[in-house]
Length: 159
Image 1: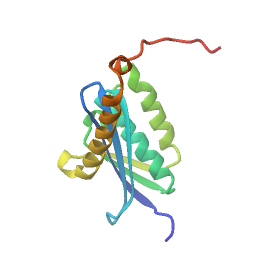
Image 2: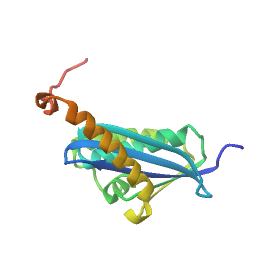
Image 3: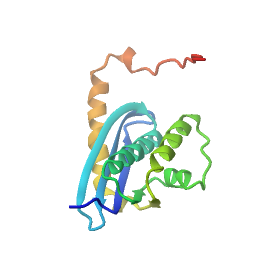
Image 4: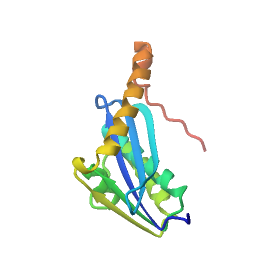
């Protein structure tokens, strides 16, 4: 089989609480709808919007490994889709580095389209992201209460 010319990536993020334990998922398919890769990641605590961006990054990394010329990203997160398309500003400071990282990961592709789809068309990625979120919840539940608290923000000057 030669290198795929066009891949479709379904992405979704899920959180238990906002912020809370999260899961991100990406499913990479060819044009015929055949699943080529499925990736899930447990992490957190984070917000649901961070989970959506983590799903995007996971999907872009997975797709890049297959070297397609064209890429279509499908997400049920209108905020993520519109921010990536440049229609919405990124107001939340914690999303800006994730957005910049996504733009860097998009560079190798010749053509990229991002589509907002209804949740009913994103059930596979939703199921996988929830599975990853449950893993994150299990890890979170095993931690002592003081370890679950968000660490205080500290800034360090490097240069």
